[in-house]
Image (cartoon, rainbow, N blue to C red; front, side, top):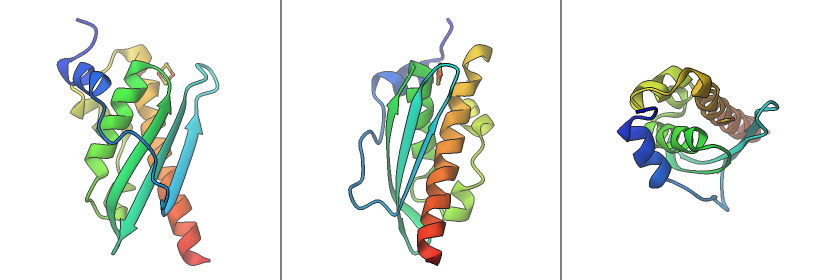
Length: 124
Ligand code: FES
């Protein structure tokens, strides 16, 4: 089986899909090679990620990675969310095929981007 049950579950029933109109930070990244795009919205209260949503226009692994990544940072302190690696996402998904690892990198990058956006707005 190419994909784990976890990947299939998060692809078929993705968690936290959508957008947050009152987001405190938004991160959008894309992969130039495959053309996939991922957008992450975060809401922050008392330095905790109180809500997170994603919109992913991409492959199944990118959707599963976004779903798992949002689950991993939800309710976590911002500094901890910033440390989320694509490796942690892949582990939580019980693996991805080698040629699909870049999809999990998008999730890490989009979260970092959303947090940076939040931190930049906060300091203005
Ligand atoms: Fe590009 Fe998955 S093939 S993100």
